[in-house]
Amino acid sequence: MPLFVSQSHLNARWGNAIPALGVALALCLTVAATAREGASFQSRLPGDPVRLALAVMAAVLSLPWIFVLVAVLGAWLLSRERAAHERAILRA
Image 1 (cartoon, rainbow, N blue to C red):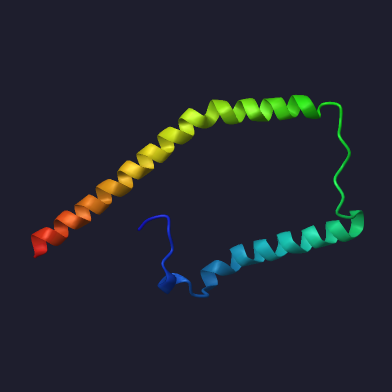
Image 2 (spheres, helix red, strand yellow):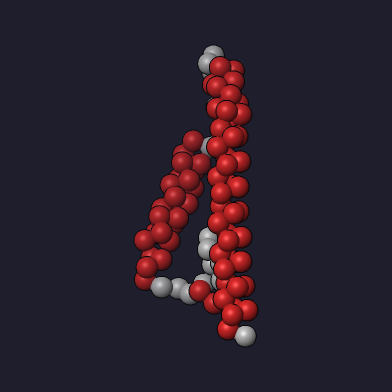
């Protein structure tokens, strides 16, 4: 099935070394920044309510595109499954 990795393909390979190094680097930078500055949140800034309103508006306005993407992806997956089922019937 596309977009999913089967259990048999979860092997350590050299092709996964660069992404693994990226994850390790992100973890090291997070630990270093937390040790240097602490894990507290920054106090609120004057423009925070405006930024929050813009983020909510962008999220709401993007919902139609997200729904279309999910519908198209679902239809594509179903068509592949139907084609595989039809091929299996023809082989039998």
